[in-house]
Amino acid sequence: MKSEKMKNQLSTIQSLIYEIRNHKVMLDSDLAKLYEVEVKVLNQAVKRNINRFPIDFMFQLSDNEWDSLRSQIVTSNSKGGRRYLPYAFTEQGVSMLSSVLNSDKAIEINIAIMRIFVKIRQIASQETSKIDEIKELRQILLLHINHTDKCFGEHNKKINQIIEVLNNLLEQPKQDKDPIGYKLQKNK
Image (cartoon, rainbow, N blue to C red):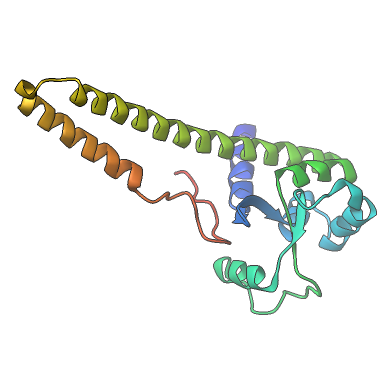
């Protein structure tokens, strides 16, 4: 039962991670809900400890970023009662939040969030590794063709077809790079 609760919690957290300015981030309002505090309380804690939150840990969204994100997460056209634009926290910023929000809930949620960010990095590194393997295989095949005689014409023709398929795989657009504000897709 506890495992199912953790899976649900991790799934919920993963759905709250967005890509903005080429960073995986979480919004202050989403973090406040997870930590079970008001957004105002979270942001006040951050402001009291602002030296712990450099620009690569936290940044405020621009009007355009907020409008784009809001259209993706289907919120109202107003700022939802907000008088300022939301803050976005990178993985390091979320980690730093646990030091300024010192509660059992903050610690529990931070651990879950860190697990999600690690999972995202693992998935990204696996994709990079696969691309590197394809490039290496293509190079080996090209070298093979260059070092064989013309008497292997039919054999080399098949290798050229394989190389063409590998080239097509490498040229496919990355599907994990979503425009600003798109939520990460859940693995089902």
